[in-house]
Amino acid sequence: MSAAIRRAIREALREREKVGLLRSLETAPGGIDFCSNDYLGLARDRRLRGRIAAVAAESAAPQGATGSRLISGNHPEIEALEAQLSGFYASEAALVFSSGFAANLGLLASLGGVVQTLVCDRLLHASAIDGGRLSGAKRVIFVHNDMRDLKARLGELPSGETAAVAVDTVYSMDGDFAPLEEIADLAEEHDAAVVVDEAHANGVLGPAGRGGTVAAGLQDRVLARVVTFGKALGLQGGAVLCSKDLRDYLVNFARSFVFSTGVSPLWAASVQSVYDMLPDLNAEREQLLDNVSHFRGRVAESAQPWLPSESWIQCLRVPGARRIRRVGGVLRSRGLAALPIRAPTVPAGEERIRVCLHSHNTREEIDLLFSAVDEALR
Image (cartoon, rainbow, N blue to C red; front, side, top):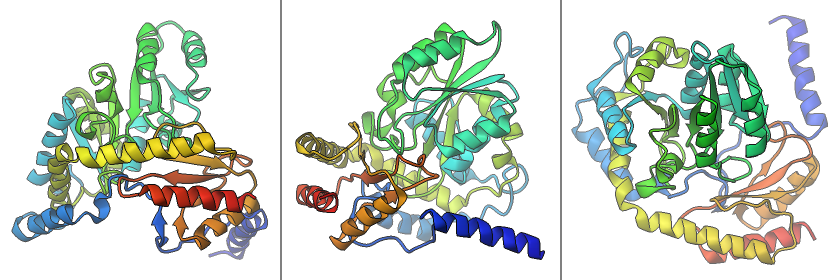
């Protein structure tokens, strides 16, 4: 490596450290879990672990795909998972990716070949933002969840220009819901398509956890949905739910699919196990929603700057990189894993403590969190 490049790397790291934003990898935090996306506790669920162990013991599927799916990596187990996903989500077709990030990236980037303008919510996930940048399409940003602004942006599009509106069902850093029905109505008024990232809704929202699009009865009114297996489902990977034509298009044009080794067939069979369980997890979903209700009750009594959210993602705004680190340290000292979110994940000045609720959290744990927050901000 050249000396100039080494100096540039070190300088970039020093600049991050100077403003209190240098990050490093640490093992998963111990303590009471208020930070993971494991909303239903499935990542450590013994029932799911038993099912996966049985799959591993009994399946003849290879551990690795051995190549991209267009060469040697397309296996019956992967196609069986995609068929299961299509049925579960009432979708014409499904295409599995190695991660939710890869699914969003591949979908949005490839849509640039057929869509002239992507109209994106300002708080869209980074994977979709990167996909939009790679798409070559014109990108128009509308004010977060502001339907008047979305209508205005759509109204400014030239007549006959193809467009797609990209949104999340649940926004990962604010926890609020997208008004999907209003978005679908506005898109149809302007002959635009809708793409929905269901990452933080999948497994939790809607009948049997089928997501916000199904909950609103909009599955036939959107171009595509992205679901991930790495949050409420407790595993890893993601998929695009779409028409058969769009699936064929992605197989040909989504570079994060075409040029990537296929997912493990043994893993695909394991993901089927969690989908077999989802319809029977109503008790876990109800407990999670009960915890959300208790949490919001405590917010109503609190003088602290909690953001408005009715989901399992709750955020306490604590501006300032060093201040948010100090607050995070107090929570950690009380045995609470609720982590600071800093720039560039959120804009500078909008730092926050992000609290993820789970079906396995207790009311006593939630009350302890509020006590610790009051102590930290006293």
